[in-house]
Image (cartoon, rainbow, N blue to C red; front, side, top):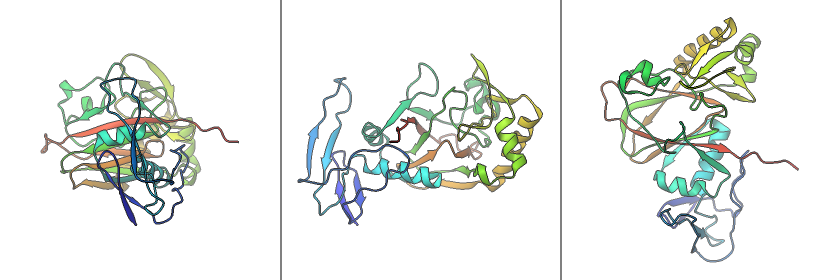
Length: 283
């Protein structure tokens, strides 16, 4: 494995082959391997925006550094459900500009970077999990379930280690029993973000949508789907935040996650980015 340092100071581990890693199901940056290591500024429409740079690696080094970290994490998450590494969140935001990822905000008018801290129910937004569970343990959920079009990719980042893990559960819809699939696909929930309501199943269009904070079962199938996710928490895997600048990338279409009890750790803080993946037209 070779290493190439990009313009932002991130050191990417690069495979010895000059072939680019498989882009999985997302459209990724075109890989350029000719020439010497060089940085070229990219013009920004906003003078205050961070200037993105393209770093070209020599053939002997193997890969384009800028975008490589996020490309590999997203590809691994789409394959395995989630992937982790270390890096600065602002660097990942620059790298996301080179991928077909569309940033989105969790709520209208808010920043696209969410700061997640344990809060008391009275201080939490309406219909949020914190409004119901406070700083206690949260149930399994997908992010952005209250949105008509939820995010495909979620990035969580912690600048400091935390003893409070994130619980991860990856569903395999087509291998679940038929009755469970029927409940997930045909049971209807009332999705309420506090300003608007609509009906949606817990599984549709190839993705999960579930959040007990903003979704209420509207029929018996949905109630059974709700119970299914409650029981699934027992088989969730704990992801531990043990390193500074740790990053966790989730396939929000296939993976539900939950925060463990944070009542004793009020200083816990994660930052979150959410993206939609641009659909690629197949030829």
